[in-house]
Amino acid sequence: MTRQAATSETLVDDDRVRVTRFDFEPGAETGWHRHEYDYVITAITNCEMLLEEPGGENRTVTVPAGTAYRRTEGVEHNVINGGDTPMSFVEVELK
Image 1 (cartoon, rainbow, N blue to C red):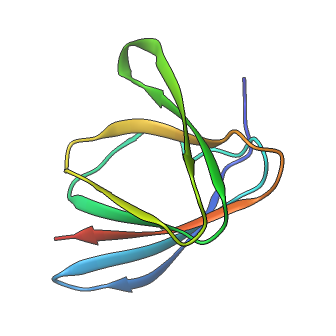
Image 2: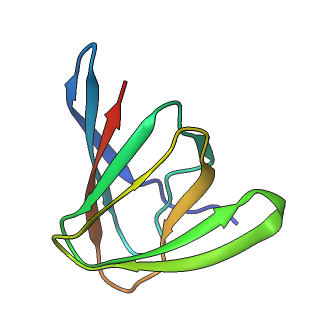
């Protein structure tokens, strides 16, 4: 199944951090990727993230607008907007 790609805009990229805003229409995806750095996600909108993970595992995570979470480097997944409204978040990668 081919999905629409999420859009991204790099806001800061220097020797210490990379800050990227991601915007997803319903059903849009990031595509498979592996995180090179520890990172923090802050939801701009309410986000219903469908996460496709290695081994065929899928799970849905709900992240309310204004909340944040962190993960460590090495995470591999495809993030899909599993909701019926647009979703947006900011990712801060710690180099």
